[in-house]
Image (tube, rainbow, N blue to C red; front, side):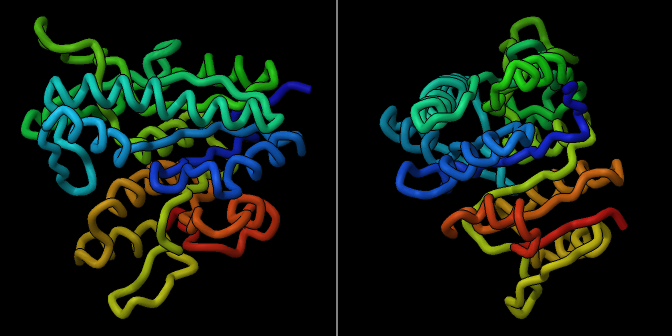
Length: 266
């Protein structure tokens, strides 16, 4: 049976969630065995920072994104595209699933340009080519995607061929390009809260934008919400932010859809 892009369940795995002791990898394998087409995008900022610190390199963040000089870009590419990606793929394959690790460079999947020179080689997505994703899914694999992109547009002659792009941003753009059934952001909080700390189970994109504008939603939640805005703009995708630290959080979300914060188009 042919798989349509709109059948995809896209999962963004935060770097703080991937841990061999939790249930996330097992959930991913079980969902694949149920016949649901999965695409996994991962982060790994803490691991990149760890490796940069070993090189006595400074690391700075602005609005939840890493300021990326050339040394940082090289480390991001090596750690996310190499170590983190392959650890996730190895865990899935060893556990009985079928996964293939790629990054946004492979198959020209993610094509970007420098978004703001002030934060270095950090990209915004200009174009998404889902051909390789669909080829892997049709062959029975979960594409596991590291958020490094081609520097395809407006690239100065002496600039690197790669760009660092936030994993949430990449997940949102792939969801938009495929019209995915669902985008699930697994993170280390239980969802979005109001100014009094109350969990908000449902938000429109306009309501979520107001939380950003007021500063109630800040830091690492900024790229997550922006990814959701991008995903739900096609009116086909449901976006949910859930606590990936909870046991079987992913399976529970697929089965009940009653976790975290759900965001829909205004």
